[in-house]
Structure formats: C-alpha cells, structure tokens
View 1 (tube, rainbow, N blue to C red):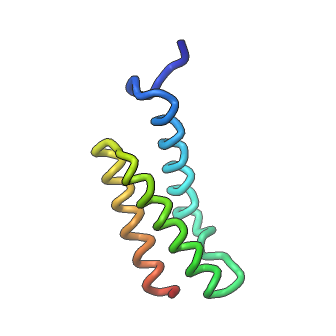
View 2: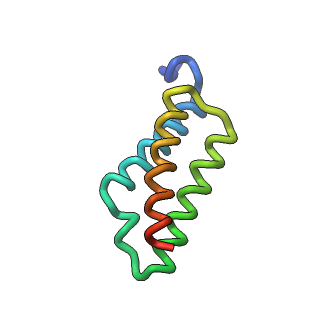
Length: 82
C-alpha cells in the first residue's frame, strides 16, 4: 500500500502539493511579473479564488493557517495592483 500523508489519501497529498506550489509562486514573486496591471490583477484574483475553493473543500488546522496567510498576502497584492 502506498504511503499516505497522515492516512488521508491521495486527496490530501494533491492538496498539499497544490499549496506548496502556490507558496512557491508567491515567494518567487512570479505572480508579480506579468504583462500589465490588468493581467496581474486578474492573476491575483484567480489565486484568491483558488485558495477559497480549497478552503471550502476542507482542511486541517495547519493547512488553514497557511491558506489564511497566503490570502492575506494576496489581498495586500490585490489592493496595490487592482
């Protein structure tokens, strides 16, 4: 049987990978290197919607804390960009 993250299955692994990807995106600043303010604003909004959809699907306390921190950063970026 394959190794599960805390016995939660493939869904938890995929969710963790997506959160890690989003964190990498935010840290690398690649969300800020786009071809104009409209595109940057839309990308930020899209990332916010993505995290919100993941939160509606359920999460652990640790995942929730990470997602809330990411949302705070994205909302600050949105305030500047949009």
